[in-house]
Image (cartoon, rainbow, N blue to C red; front, side):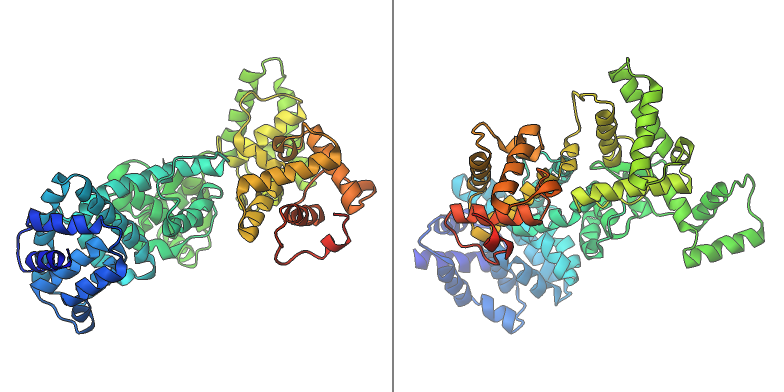
Length: 537
């Protein structure tokens, strides 16, 4: 077998055509689990792979050998591209391109063994794209690799881009609390890190820019995947280059992709026009006015106005409030419109502490109204810090709108048939239990279901309620609150107002329950909180 492999590699590296018989030998050997990484490394090094890299040997034979190694070992693909990028001779790239093209047809025609190599090619593409974040110097050669019409990795990229598009399309549902979504890339550590880092853009329009993803924006733009490119441009700078934006939308400054509103960059003439509109101008500004506006643009003093009014918010607060009134009017026709208005106003007066707040101040986005909305959003952020809703507007259908809908319904004692999923985060116990389970799974290396059951069992024992469920606890039902109160009295020795039936995130009840679950699982808890020593566990 070993001699056959060496002969096949030698034949393939010295030929401009991909021999199916030799490729079959490689594929069959690759399927042999007894031939590990060390074995293959020795084989490739005997063919000159390591020497070609360390001694900068650039010959057609070495290009083909390193191409084959990158196919079989996806983890070596970044090293192959770095090696290629250090030379600019077009002929070397053509050698690899032609070689890949001769391998593609027999690979797609081979059955089981061929599919194994195609899987490895997919893995290579999945590796190289996140690698560009840390090694942006590989961007030009990465574009070459994935854009070659008959290239092996370009062939596999066609599937990966579908998976990326699918995962980005699911993120808004993930943020709203849906579980068991069919993500394609979330199990890959590199892609999971990317998706988790950009998750905040579905939660908060003011989420900080992430300039480290500029190579990805440039890559997808160069590959013609404009929807994904627009998303990453939005992530990088908050704006999409006009030439990219107009590939998908020819009108306006803004549109929605992946349930996120993105805006295109605006040139100086457009900025002046938008600002003149904001200032109420109906004719072209005078030279003096133009000079003042350009100076203001230079120092960034007035950009906030046009961004928030024309680029930032797809709908006004007044439109959001009107949509909410219409919703309640259609769903609960017996409720007077006046009561709905009073409930909305009560929510914002309570959040801001401004008893004199008027409806007009909210709907017309006057200073007092914007501050009241921000105060409300700040309170929401206390339940889930990841929300960070601090932009002082209410957009129809967005998170603040959904939370407000739930609050208004609660004030009017109305049961929403389709209560927004995200409103679960208004319950402190939802966030706390989620965090508690996450902590224990990580710190104890335990199964999530075992941790969940441990929490429920403990509270069942101390409340003497064997019908208690996890949902009772997280949704703060009367049964759930009573169970937590019983635990607080008996274990933590709370008295009076401290017995509230709430498990506040990382506070005393949270800490003691965390220790209690670890003890019942008979697993030592690292960094055990001191309060656990005084609790009656």
